[in-house]
Length: 372
Image (cartoon, rainbow, N blue to C red; front, side, top):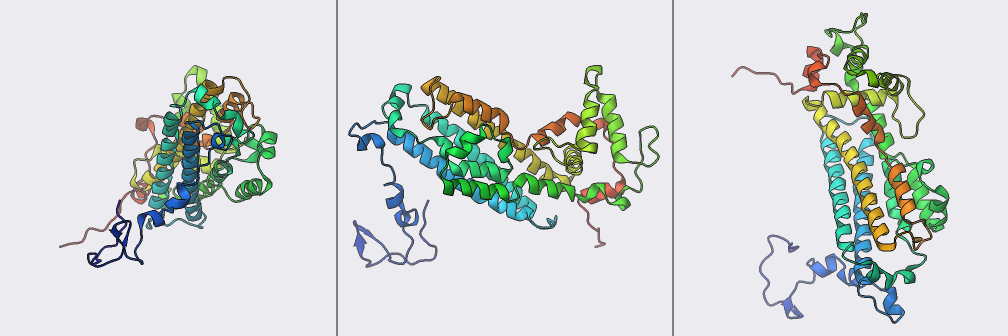
């Protein structure tokens, strides 16, 4: 990639540095990327101890790369939180497109993080043992940036696995940064507020011509119809799902990470009618949030298998229970599981209630045809 600015005349009679002409005011690759700092930031402990371990350089660079990607993820997530902090997201503005685009970038970065484990696994257990004991008590668990990412997405402290260990192994200033992130509105919370404001279920003029299908639904309530259609789709073994339907979509629940009933109904409506143009980006947003959960779980799973392969049942360098801690975090640290739960309530497209014409027009592309 070239960083030379466009529309600049060719270099002539310029001073040379290391045999190459340069312009003092121009942007130079090495300086722009601060390579002197970056490439001199690897100081293997094994070399300090006089017993150089070849693979420690790989270990350092992989983890430094993780931290750089974590910084980029936070850069993207904070910009998305800023967009969703608005009182209203204008559907005729690019805000939603920008949010979905940046969220997909985060997902792409997480895929890279998973594949970086392939590089780390070229190091064998004996290679790791050449320098492992020199790392104590440092641990990947002390990555405060990753914990900030979890908090920004919506993982609450009370949902964390082994909370005491989490608190005791961060320095006070780093723990405060994580706490500060936990005190701010998370992306999950902001998305929930946005879903609660979705107008399509609550504008009476769009539902004037709705034709109910459930027996006794004279009021023409969409969710009465949908509950009845959902019940018809359940097998005898699945009838308990109807109680779960009422809890999630009608009554609400205090379970950690659960959405409010209004937000759950909006999210389910988006999933059901995602083929309408106005709901395509909202559906992509929800689907990408589920991608993030899946990719972070995959990263933890790969990490768990790598740790088991490298150290077996031994204690982690930071004093954690090694694979036991990673397994617990894998099972407990899902953030957007409330959206995954909603797929329980999907029915076939062919059985969906027909939306009234005015609402279909509001959900589609509308324009006035003018005479030539």
